[in-house]
Image 1 (cartoon, rainbow, N blue to C red):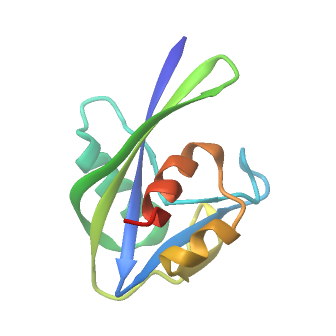
Image 2 (cartoon, one colour):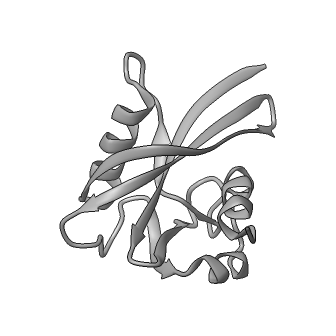
Length: 130
């Protein structure tokens, strides 16, 4: 089974977290996710995440600690999604090349959205009560 290595950013602004809705013409269109993308050959996960966020959202982040790594079977392949805490440098993003909506939510608001399956473990961890 083919494994597709993907990274995603948990971008925070105070107590809010950025959620992005995938454009309808994309796979999993209309579902919410943490922004990110595929790791290219020769990249570290951190490099891939910084590049993807710059490309999609036009902002600069620095990558912090790993939040989750989970595998999701999608047809003939496995999506291995690594979600990372990131620090935003500069103003928050207003638009995205891959998404038709951006929302800043508190942890308690995250479960109200319809999330893409690979992002669900990170949502669960973010919303778990200590």
